[in-house]
Every structure is written in C-alpha cells, then in structure tokens.
Length: 426
Ligand SMILES: [Zn+2]
Image 1 (cartoon, rainbow, N blue to C red):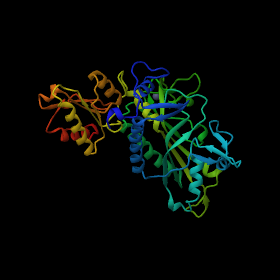
Image 2: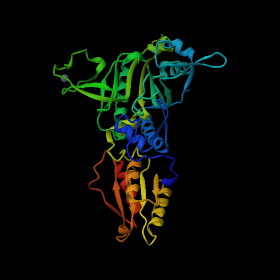
Image 3: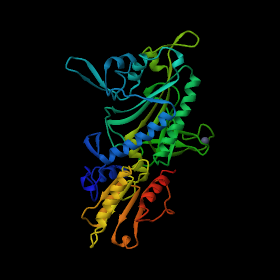
Image 4: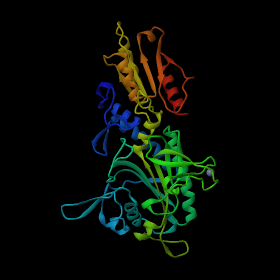
C-alpha cells in the first residue's frame, strides 16, 4: 500500500469530541469513523488491527478445541420469548418485518446457539464441545462513550460450551481462562487481571471478567495483596475490606475486555435442549459462555499504549509490519530505492506501506507514528552514503534498545525477516 492511496483521514492537532487519550489517537490516526452515535466504520487501518486480533483469538479458541460457526445478526422474537428474555433484556432492539413478524437484533447469542444445538445434540457421547463465532452485535444502550469502549454496535467473539457434568464444565472453564490470558498477552496488553464477577442477567453461578487496569475504565475493581480480586458488584456497599484476609482493598479502574460464565442449565432448561445421558435419562446439558469484545480490545490497547504521537501496537496486531519512508535526495536515488525495497518486501508477503510522498520529513514521521508499523525503514542520502538503511522500532511489549539501528543495503531482506521474528518473540 502506498500511503497516498490509503483510504484513511489522519488529523493534525487537537481532536474534538474525544473523551480519552486512546479515543483521541484512534480518531487522529483515522482508525475509526463515527457513522452514528455508538456505531463506527473501521477504516482500512482499524480493520487490519481488528482482523489481527481476531486471528489471535481464532488460534487460541481452536487450540482449546473450539469450532467456529457463524450465527445471524437478526433472529426471530420466538426464541427470545422461549428463553423468557424478550421482555427482560433492556438493550434488546426489536423491530417488525413487513409481514408483521417480530425480529430482534441479537445483543448476545445464547438463544440462537441453543436453538442450533437442539438440531445437533442427541447423546452424551457428543459432549463436551464448544462452538464460537466472531460476529456483530447490537445493544440499544442509553449512552455510548470513548470510541470503541462502549458502543451500540460492536464485534464480539462469543463462545458456548456444552457439558454433561458440572466438573467437566469447571475443567473447561479453566482451559478457557488460560486461553484468554494468552490472547490478551499476545495482543501486547500488560495490565490485564481476571476478577470474580456477578453473573448479571446472564444467569448461572461463577463468572470472571477480564479487566484492563486503566484510569480511563468505567468499571471499579478491587485488588488485594493476598491475590483476591473482584468487581464492584460483589463488594458490599461501604465495605472495602478483603473477605479473604481482612486487609483494606486497593480500588482501581478497569476496562472490561472479556468475560466468562458458568451458565449451568438456565438456557438448556428454558428452551428445552435435551440429550440422552450416560445413565439412560433425558437431561439438559450444562453450559458455559465466553465473550471478548474485539473492537474494545483494540481500543484497550490504544488506552494502555498510545503515547502523544499515536498508538503503539506490537508485531501481532499492527496494521502494517513495515513502513518504508523515502526522503528525497538531489541525485534522485532514494525514492526509487525505497520503492524497490517496498516491492521486495511486498513480494515476500510482508505487510508493508510506502511513504514516497513529496512532503517534509517531519510530516512523514508524524504520519508514521500514527500508522505505527513496528519496523520503520528510512531511506535517505545520509544513510545511503554508508550503504545502509536506518531502522526505527515502535512496539508496545518489547525493549528494542539492543536491536540493530541500521540494516545493510545487501542484507535488508533477511534483516527485516529476522527483526519480525524477534518482535513476534520467536
Ligand atoms: Zn486479601
């Protein structure tokens, strides 16, 4: 991609309407565009980041034996009436078709997945299994805030597991907990904790939220030196004492980026999903459900890592791995060389962007900070005199102070490949 053709509008100077630093950088860099209050268009940059996060999630869900499916955004009201949630979920958006049919925009998919699994599940031998999807949801929230932190329409990974026994669910719940820790670590997020939470209108018994500790968060969480962690709902009013050890709890703000629930039989019961159990009886499977806000994860990375110049990704999430910047010289050598390097990297399958515009170096570097490719190659007359290309790194999870600051003109291809592997932690 050449920077002048990138369908993204970057802004210079201050940004109006942004409530947090991460939100400001998302708008400045042109990652998101507000189409309506609480609904965003992801630009080519934003969508590249989100797709990278989705791929990390897919790999980790597949690694715990998840099976990806895709359920519809819309469903009939009948399954929501069947579960009893049609009139109780306040964010449920309802509409009528021309024939008079009642529809909903699904804010979550328990009803839809249970309806699907009814068509599949016959015997205990099929369990356990987990299905998941990465899909758009809609919640008719009264308020939306801070860019992708709280929106009405959003992309979510939601997973549902089915078990014969409670202990089997508990074992799987632990596996999923581990997968979530790996997902957020691979996204470059540093201060993520899982805290006990209430199950809210999801039903069920045990639940955890994955919270990014951050001052911009809208949730309050309590941490204790002894390791106890919980959210506000589980702490009695006025009491900020650890129920485990009696010490005063440490109160911090958090951004919720994921949650996991042991649902029990709430939905298999209400919607009459059954199977033939190992003891010969007909039973309702025990369920777990597991969510991650995908766009919100991108927003969380920006809240945690952005500096004053722009967002800072890691190699796994960045929209481009490499940016090649040509600084024009009098002999006319640098720009053709920058283009050749760009073409070679592209041919090798490396996501690369080229800035050969006729613009000041300062403007190019400011744009590069917003696009935030972890590896930046600078082709200038000064460097060419030394048969070298200057390298700059911009990553949020690795100390690059020991890394090479220039690549040889003859060795830049293996040098770039080597740097990418190092930045990926390989
Ligand atoms: Zn404690």
